[in-house]
Length: 121
Image (cartoon, rainbow, N blue to C red; front, side):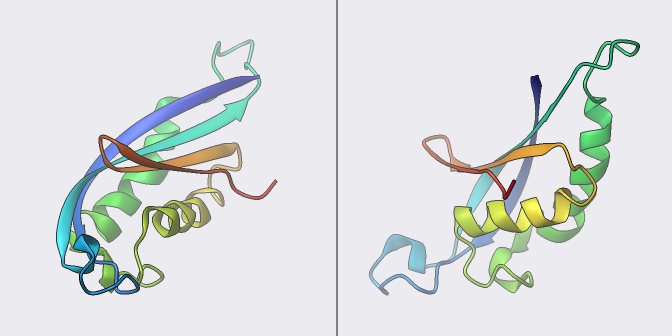
């Protein structure tokens, strides 16, 4: 079994409306998000790979570019409270229908704060 990981980046703003008003994340602020999508699968002996990295990008890039990049995430349907956890789950739901080999979605909002989501099996 292999795991392939493809990374992506996008810029967006958000605020967390459920935290106390004196919490730093209550105010609108931005992040340079790093997203990783991991797929698992067996090696295709003829091709020599599990999946073309381009197939992952073809699914994920349009979602990031059209729905998330340079947006206020709170305005995206389903992300009204856009924590890293909710964003990872939101991405999983959109990607897994086209990449059933999906194993993990990772959302990093800073270089030290990362969330991994492993969807239902």
